[in-house]
Image (cartoon, rainbow, N blue to C red; front, side, top):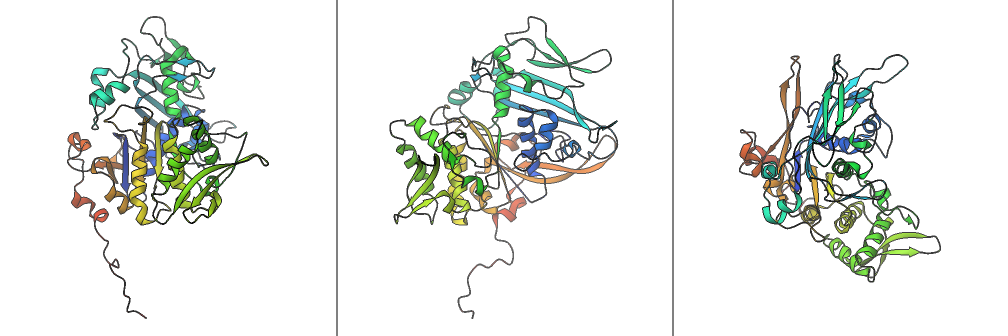
Length: 466
């Protein structure tokens, strides 16, 4: 990412599970914004995507210049993204037809610019400057997947296919210098590319591919569409669902009952109680919550689905009576069970609403959402990736060292001589990310605030006080 908010020439290597830790205001959330923006661009126009980044329940907010570093300063503005991804081995197009990509390990690159408002326009617009999608060779996969994993059980299972010749999408220039985006045939380099002028394009080319004719581009689009940013809201988590409503949980937690109902009847049609019992067992890990059972209640009169929990005391509690922390934990338990949830999930401060005594089980749950790279992906090892951020010392102490990145800011100078501060992400020394980091790592001495009790903290209670 380069030029997006305070992300300046920033490269992040993500493993199956990654925790970014840092103080408020460093720009940790900008990483999530960038991922969300790329996901939105796979589904919406550039302007719609720009206005929804870090929006509130779909509200259209903001000026596209907000996406650029120093975007309101005079002069031209550009932002560049590159994402390496492992796409599904089979996807479905918008017409219900199955499609298999030629290769599954891909690199997508995108460059956007800003065109100021003119005439009667009151707001400028984003412009498409370049777009490409190419394959990463199987022989090079190890150099691009540096996190510890099993080559036979994991890498060779998820990196499939071969291709020679042209990229799937490339950018060239016409005689006037304007960018031309080209789609190349999926089967190889033969045939003429399908060109499209980029200057007035309202959306990325990837977002326009809806059929199985360009199956690898479609697989990349489906992968980016699957990236989600969880922002669980208690009001949404407490809501009941209509029988005819959606049965996929939203990023805010809406449709939790219908989602659990679907999962239970899909995984175990003859005995959905098995899934409810497994979910209740995981929820029971929370200290202070005596969970006996959990179920989705079907109200045929009002045609509603609601989640109901039975305590060990026998008391029945509907979802609307549960605490915010319990509801968030329950939502993650449901995601863990959902075979339709794949791709990348981003979560900000998963510890919110969780009692300190339950931080360990929360970290375990979040970690279990991610794929185990030492086993083959499958029903019991869903192909998922998880990225969280935090400023909690408790979370940092519980996360494995190899999964940590520490956020701060560092000064940089632009080609025009401007000085600013950009986000810096550094791994812990002696972990896999630190091997080629050119000294850009932290030691335990650098992160003492996360490992020690703060000065002035009360270490014992004074029971003798009046």
